[in-house]
Image (cartoon, rainbow, N blue to C red):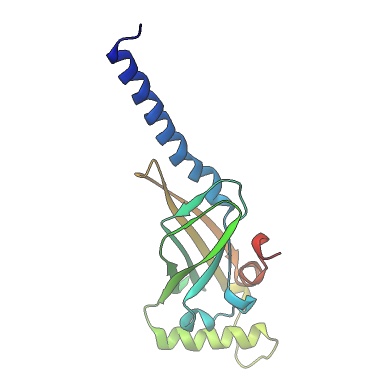
Length: 172
């Protein structure tokens, strides 16, 4: 016959192991999350007015994040950051998260973004070096509900536009 202390210890081990295992799943599944702009119509000016981002979890595991953001940089100058709130997604599902654009100077950023978009469209209205646009994305999450980790990717402006306008695996 097994005594009470052994049973309590075994149940505690099972609960702790299960909790650690479940929270660690996020470290495996969240890097696979895919983000896209609603209507596949991202342009730099739309960052100021649009408030949502589509998210797809193509993994067979649940995934969550604390914050997704992207910062737009032109010639080493930070023009602003679009940041979302947290999101949790079941396996093989998609959804929408709400976000907001913050900039040190919205008037100047809007002017630059309109120049970027016309240059991207092939109309040369100003001297804007499209190769000088960089976008840094950050996906912030936690492991074990406490330990933070951040996944950072750097893209050129054109790479980012192509990525964010591409249909996600959930939309196919």
